[in-house]
Length: 490
Image (cartoon, rainbow, N blue to C red; front, side, top):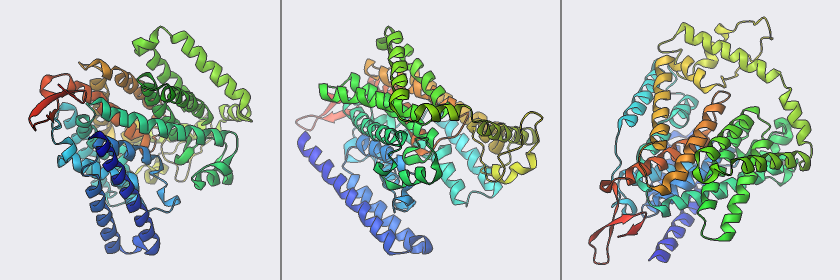
């Protein structure tokens, strides 16, 4: 039966890949963006076919693939695929649809449960939507994208629906495998960029961006070093979970190798915020995990030695890192943007200037400092997520967003859960610390945000699995209902 399900899943994924290729062909053959009716028809056709293909698939696998493919989310057009037809969005929408509609693979799973934290997230999202509506930015494509995928609409929906599909170890293993492979890919790309081998990088747009003035920082498929660093750290955490629970020695060694590769990749981003966040997040993970706490000193020394070797082995890394650490212009930019953001909060403390209005309004709040020059003009965006939300949504919107995030992370880390969820709770805490630090410097792209809420959802799956009422039911040999613990019938 398992082999048959695996073959069916493989066939469905192959069908989905062929469908994506068909979508690329249609998009290149017709000017989709110039013809709204044609664009709507193509999108609906592809969405419908995608839903049909994944209807009987493993929701955990399709969701994991959707999150993994979202590393290209902002740059699919550089590969030749329009955003509305990108595979990650198709898989994500199809997976959400199959969870809501109770597809056959999850029909016997417990339904999703709405708690206080979910209502807080709904209110925060409603506040942001109203802000965009009043500010007149709701109809703008970029503003709507930021609202749906970066502020929280899709991540919040994942946090609500996904816990029910990650209670079984088999489903969590799907996430581990996909994220470990994703981490390996990101680590290799970062290493190639670090040594200057941009011609060997795939997709080509990554190397072309670096060669055309993108700098020596390892931005990976994101073309953004901070987002790439966040993705590397998140994948490294999941790979470490997989290494500890690996059944085969080969996969264990591969997973540990990915962890080391991703840590080196974080270094190659040449971003000070990533260095600080990775150090803090790794230290939290080591101390919070009982299994690694006693090895804290050797592990820290191993990380230091690995970083030292990277400085010695990777050509030009030491010079690039020194140059970045002494770069004052980016510091001045951030200080000026922060002054403008705080000025908006002071002038509009309740509702802010409106969603996605910072760039248009910031000129009115520019002030010359006595200690550094006035920079960051033009279309520079505010790199601090907290101040950005405060400036655009006011202190009310910022407080709602913060409260929802704290409740989601805190609820996943604390409370009762089976022992097998302990590594996931540590990973959530570690990545939350990492994310909170980099959010003070930049708000990352889609993948790092999705990973925060996926990790929170997996941790909350442990809360659901801790009570007998939340145990999923499976069909026995005669079709009778049976209880299942960690995917095994009892």
